[in-house]
Length: 260
Image (spheres, rainbow, N blue to C red):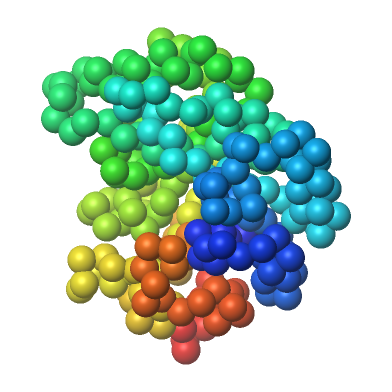
């Protein structure tokens, strides 16, 4: 199992601390949040990028994704190409993007204006780095992301868009995990997971305080080799326990430890 975590769970932490968290808890992958206040951002020089890549690779870690805040369907210009260049320089598997479409702008059986903008965007950038479209915001369900990816397959063959499945997010929108997986499978690249409490409007909570069906997810993914990434949203939910407290329990949680 290729298991990683997002640096969203340790906002502002220096690289040395992130590497220590990963190595001491048997995690091998990272989703690097790209923002000016983090050690990963598009303003890094070529030398800084080389140093960052070398330090991560020398630590035996893989960059699952550069986590951008690009909104693929947005009206305004988006810094997609800059993030793709950063991912290429760092050897990442791809760039995480959000759909970011305006809801209710077109019939369900036709691409929205935002999806047409996204189509233009993905056909005008280099195709050597995958664009990892997360199940999020306007496209919170696997069904919505799969429908858009099918449009891309038809209208832009060879496009670089893959799916990043936030499994807790699709579950919170009423899809069974097996259903979401079946829909996303043709494009699936990375799977995110986290704990949430359906009794509190799917609020992120500590591992032992929610009801996300983690064993169901493990069963659905049995026999596959997708990278699994813990999206611990401490940046947005400061009530969560720190990653240093959470990571040691993740392996047991995935294995179905009855105490978790």
